[in-house]
Length: 479
Image (cartoon, rainbow, N blue to C red; front, side, top):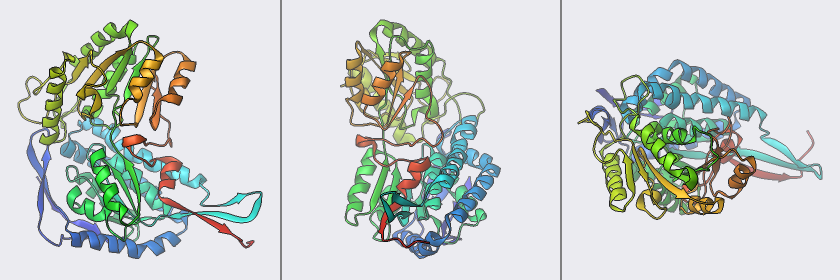
């Protein structure tokens, strides 16, 4: 078991102000794998004070120098990618091969994209030809609180830290207490890269403690949070008294609309996408809407694919899915699977309980429900596990109505060989992202949603802009 680690504040590793131990559980074994300290208000205040003190100097640092430090961070990240993968595999249950390629790989991908975007970004620019003496200046929002989740840890840490650092913000990060080890490795990397003291600070804690202290802190200028819609709502309310910026990336209940002319791999692709990361992705295509002429065959295919999805320990190499993150999530998923059965959806793969041969660990059977309707609980709530809900539809208009009939609006998916229809669907689906025919979004594309899936955008130019204020200047003197 990994021994307890301290916090990173003002360029140093410091002991917590008061003992408050928390055991990190390996979901593959249900055994403790590390002990961390949860921060107190004194720890939060110390981190915020360090960030506030470092802000003027970091904002004044030329952006070229800030970019150069992030470039150095990329090199260090590459050298420590295996450490990150091992940590995430152990603490949140990502199978080690997937942890290497996707979980760890996502971080370096985002950092490189920020560097590319920043080098082309005009932090100072003319208003326009009509106003030669006006300038628009993009400057750092200020002290940023970064609250990251357990399901894609390095993906979210780098999306926030990379953008904030280049923008000139100083920051305090609170990683999820369920998966904190990778973030502490990242803090070592920031230290090695040579970021000035106070620019990056890390305090472990839970949402009720450090999370609430950060979101309500008068010296925090913005909060960037990724997590549940429930927590995002609480953060918004707590931040309202200080009128700080709040950027949220929250839950989803994505529709994957499969038309009758979809390519032959569309259903299989959709099932495997749903099962990736054991279904613990906010942008998972968890509702598969299938046009009726191919519905029966699609159900048969989905069941066949799900039944072949292997489940096993995160420490084992291979193409399988691991456990869900903890007992709370496991129990919630079991209850929702049972709810699907009770409400009359047809179970065609999986079901309640652990997969055969696994009697310990938070493993869930890859599950597919057919013949559901959009009012069932399994079609309304974000399950956050390897559970797919299939719903038939007849017309394009009906598909749009079902897809949009959700409080969420993160990612929707469309499978059709009709280009005009694909484009029509993209325009009317109410979500921050739409992906077609298995083609993911390109490097630098913004990630984020609408409705109860949150606000703000992460990645590329839009990710930088999230951490920048716009200052309008009239009467600019010629230089």
